[in-house]
Length: 379
Image (cartoon, rainbow, N blue to C red; front, side):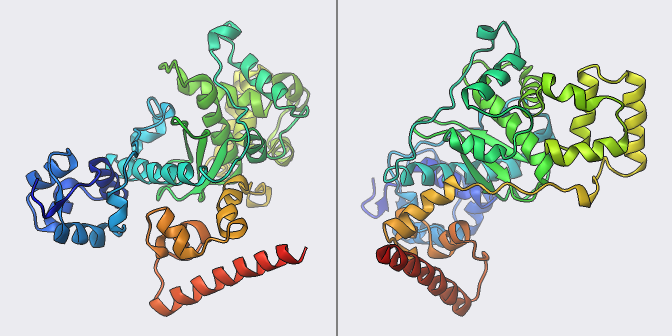
């Protein structure tokens, strides 16, 4: 190898490029190199000269140290992505960008969990065959093992976090994906949820992803989507408990039931039809009424249910910024990010700030951390 070339992790170069939404040819053009040269770099066949490494860092907006990370595993789509029908309307470039960003966030989770103990994960895979093929029985078993009360689940995110699944708010850059789950080796189950999705839709999708995590880790099948939907319906709206509520169903009654069960009117209507509590004719009539009222596109705003705010992930971040006293700069270095991106991802600062605005944002964040630590010291 040429002495001027530095060895880098080729897999990390790929996810850095894809996380910024660039193709190999586009990045090669910006680097003023041939695509063949970059292809060899990404295949691990050659290193990168210092001058180009610095240019790579500037273009992709990651520190040089990001590309030199060792012992980093990169994973493909989670099992729930294999047959996910909604993914078909999202471009491959968008999906590659999302998967790359999720890989990077997973790397952050793994790094942070080296210094934080969140306790034992009580989510475990179930084989459907163990329950005679009954997805509903699995949903009931999970509710029982998690000691959930009868009736609606008031806070699904909290229930998953109590079982030590990590729910991470995430901007997918599209409304066509509500959530993606992933359970790579070495970390707890991860649930990335779209910050732009309505709360009722997100709860059902999050529960759908929980079904994938529990049932399909080892034995994915073409029926996975239907099974995950069935799991979510039984988990959020147990048949034995919701049946009495579905008698004499009407549009006003669906509206009354939505805040109580915390699922959409559409999910309640489908549940009633699946349980045989309404006839096909009644279901068709109600769907037509939903369409005429515009509820298939947007259910009444006044019926919006409160969004569920994940707390476990924030507690993990806070363990570094508050309990361990990490500065913004130190946290960014630990995660191999520039400070601006660390501030955006973990402290909610806008991605693009002028230099003076950014300095003020960092100063304010670190003042909050100092006040928190001083308050703890005074206790």
